[in-house]
Image 1 (cartoon, rainbow, N blue to C red):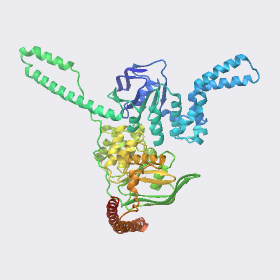
Image 2 (image 1 turned 90 degrees about the vertical axis):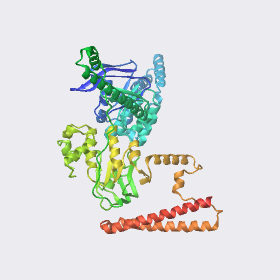
Image 3 (image 1 turned 180 degrees about the vertical axis):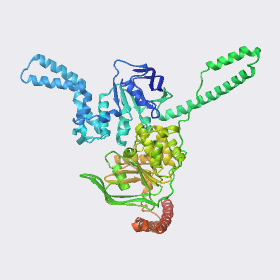
Length: 629
């Protein structure tokens, strides 16, 4: 279908590609990966003819059509409704519709047999092209990627860049090109839309190439990984997990070959050195010299898995309660985001806030931060120091500053050597730290802003889509940094792998209330799937999670003595929980928060009370097992 042969491309003296080759077949579903700056987007632009290669050729069969979703489409504007913009995918079919309408109009005043015959042929072609379902198909895809039915008649110009990109994605999906090329499509999609696209692509009849840092998305959509490395295109069959396994095996083989070759080279060099002066060995020595000159060198394996060796610590430890939301409400006109909802954040919580766009995730982050007006109360705990990262923080970077200078101005008091260590963790090494911010790519600016956030010595982080515009290595570095972070954080992300690696609680907004699942993302998805099953089949057995969180009702036929003991324990637990609630309410009072000694005293009472409840609950569970037995 498409053949890339001996492709080379240079940026000045730096080669992005050197004699790279690749064949894309009719059913290939490819994930294109590589570090930022290795030329992923450049390769796609060369394939559509926007950029000319320095040498080599890209050839495609005559019947190959290409649809390309790239970041340049963010600037596309139109006053047409988004439904009409998306339906431009059916331009040829819509032209048939126009011709049919013209003939019908002409037949109103000039009925002729040749017009009837022509109309019949056009209608036959229109029906064969599924013309009568065009609008329904367009509506299905637009709504699948997150638009509401009421949005479909709104002009494209009214939407932000990310939503305009979704319209262009819908148009490409409707066109069904034989090769679909998607450059970072998940950057502009929320989690439900990502999952919808995954299902759509799994049944896509043509080929596609996806550039993405979302490894879960790649795992569920591709059957081949193409890695850009050292100016070449390396092909791995299977999804991203298979790629990692195969890459590790290939690296092991290459490293063994490198070490064996180095040993052979040393032995040969010793032979040459030892017998160079002996005339009887001159022929053998010359042969060894020529052998070394002709030997194809095996490269050592470069470790691409950067490790974070800088500890992101802080001097001030927060109190037990970091934030407390009580009866919080937030609305934009008639659009209600939150209503009389409350929740708490405790020290050590690693919370991921998930859900569809438009539910108010970023708004909630700003409410927690205190930068968004709202109803109700948001209380901040003792010694809480907050740092907030969001995409608009990139705009606050001083573009004339060098990277190192930008971190110095963060005001942490760290030495230049320490700051260089931090920048090394975020892939800025040696002389790169003296680059000006204005010459950095979007991904590089994101890394600088993240580094500034993490060195701020804050004990509470708010992170809004921190993985956007980061490549996989940078995401891995961020994961490592957050895993070793000893403070508290609340983040918004649609990257499921990232969430699964860093979060110990899941939040979402439902019916204008903040909901919480006290566990990892994998546990949350399992619990959610069980809920869906139970809703589909009301008579089915409740999930294990539901059983664990709900005290079972004692069976009517049980030992009276055990029943009385059980009742006594339940009353004790209820009383202890009431007392715990009173302590919690005391701890968030402003006068208590300001008094360190009183806060410490109440924290100790809180811990003791919680321990008592756990012990009573353990006894209650043992008694229930005895009764049920």
